[in-house]
Picture 1 (cartoon, rainbow, N blue to C red):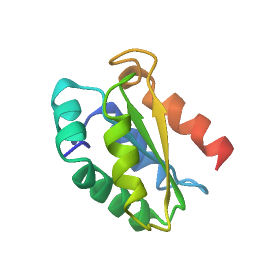
Picture 2 (picture 1 turned 90 degrees about the horizontal axis):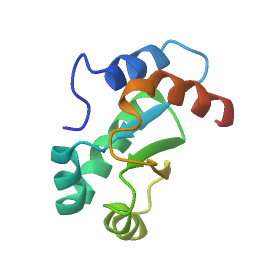
Picture 3 (picture 1 turned 90 degrees about the vertical axis):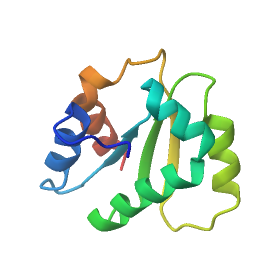
Picture 4 (picture 1 turned 180 degrees about the horizontal axis):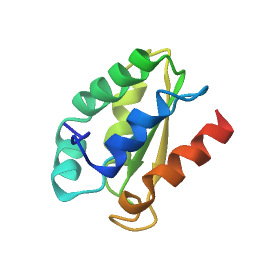
Length: 112
């Protein structure tokens, strides 16, 4: 799945559950995640939305590589009727988020 235990993003997600406004961010920019994102966008959305519902948020963020996967995700979203809003946020370049996942979570908390 896209959330790997002990990864910086996983730790940031786990930490966000303990704050007043939890944030769910799926960072799908590694090569394996890009394959999953383009081949099975509904699977990616199922995982993202399951976590979002579990922590009680109404908006979840999906980071994608620039120009890759966003079309497949948007198509998959258009077929769904989920109560959780998915914000697609293209990374500036592949791998630009992993080191600053906690900063991204803090930023997302400000707009939630």
